[in-house]
Image 1 (tube, rainbow over the protein chains, first blue to last red):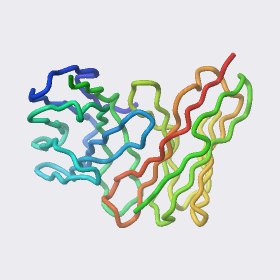
Image 2: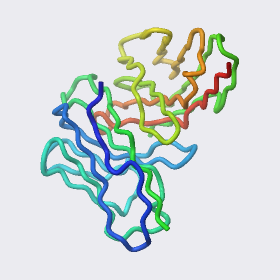
Image 3: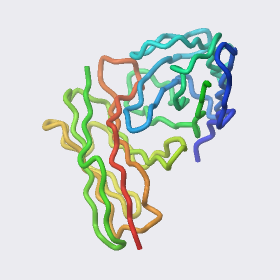
Length: 116
Length: 114
């Protein structure tokens, strides 16, 4: 059973608001990821972290930012939401064992964001 | 860059049929391949993980095979049930990329009707 949680599940917010999407995992995983998914499309990596105080941007350019102050927590922030940010955001984690193939990924339930 | 393609994009079958979902990827230098299930508006549930050194994995009515050299994986679902209705996603992690980073296909949307 995966223990990775995202809140809120659904969010409708007005343009210009600042929002933070929460992601927490209790598995002690070093690696955490944020993916963005539009309907019928592939998931695209927007941020990842190897561990505390480590964050990198992914393949898909995003105006969001992330932080990793604690191993279990990887929040994503949009300083000023716009309608183009409307999407589903999925958080994932995997075991941080460098050099091995044991990288099964576990996903949260996602946050569906609508900016009006 | 790793590109993942899933065929068919959608599949609608009566209950009880055995199904085959296909996944292909362009770069065979992978660590592993993972099959996920996604219900509408929900997150991803991991179904099967195949390491690059393995040929197949089984879990209940699900069997996934991997042919790394040809860049293909197949997910077999035996005796399908209406509860199997969901989108099935294939994802690979690529050697030389961010450790643990996954490249996804667009999925196969499966509908099993009673």
